[in-house]
Amino acid sequence: SGDERLLESLKRSFEFIAHFMHPDRSIGGEYTSRNTQTYYPAAFEMMAGQCPVASWIAETMRPAVRTLSAAGLGTVDIYNLFPLLNNTVFAYLGATAHRHDALPPRGPSESPGVVHFPDAGLLKVRRERYDLYVGVHKGGVVKLFDRQEERLAFSNCGYIGRLANGKTFSNQIDVKDRSAEITEDSILVEGQFFQASRPVMDPWRFMAFRLFSLTFGRFKSAAYWLKSLLVKVLIYKKREIDVRFRRRITLHDDGIEIADHVEGDPTGIESLEPGDVFTTIHMGSSRYFVPHELISPPDDGFQRPIALADLRTGVDRTIRVRLSPEARD
Image 1 (spheres, rainbow, N blue to C red):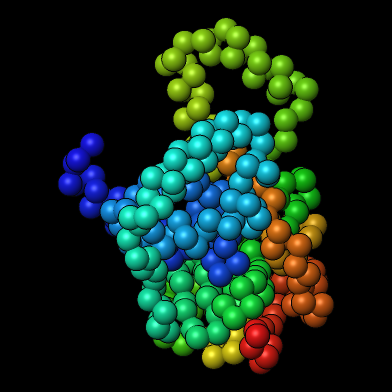
Image 2 (image 1 turned 30 degrees about the vertical axis):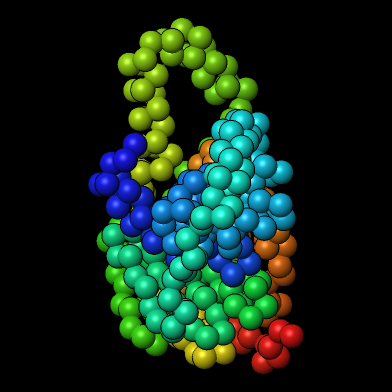
């Protein structure tokens, strides 16, 4: 369009999202508010001739379109297949158009440091050996990537449990005002557990929804009303559970250490355990398969279920994640 304000806005958005292109060429995930991991390549390929950061993203993530290290054409469902296919066609046209005039790529700084986006609740720690991503608003979700081996080395999405009434609860709920302390050497996140809204469609709900869609749902105002209601109930509504947590992440040159403390009233709770990969809200464009989900969590005491009888006095868990000293050839 030639709008300079739009161009500057796009450049800022590229600089932001470049931080979340992982060493294994995946993107995003459970530490973000929507849990999405799909890579749409067109904008970066089309802007490679005008923005060095877009050029870096396009060059870095181009292999992911083929390998599906980020969710892509081979993993999305039918509802997102056509939009992504359309986007990929535009990406191809952009890549061929800028084959000879793409700007030299410029990615995020290689220097060790902490990048914090407090309004988004996102934190990235870069060390010579690893990139660490923490979902501060999401209760301290952790994704640790080995930069030398270009792989996901460790994942922990917090704790998830089941109540006696069959509902689930977790500390992995997006809360904007979570208490957090961030320094160069450690990250502390604490707060409450909340009931998670994870409804499953049954025959009666499905028939009611279809009946609405075929009648009142034909009217735009009624359809928007139902959509806003579902978003409020499924995403924004929060119901506290009388269980609290504190997670401290200590940063080392060769990895991290996580120390958790969980305590509360076990009444009405059937189970509670940590999880390496899970989500707590329904988001239509999330939870597509990515290969790094297949990594095995460490076989140690950190992963075992919590003994509910110990909740009243508090349960402490610690895990030290060390990256192998051998560098990649």
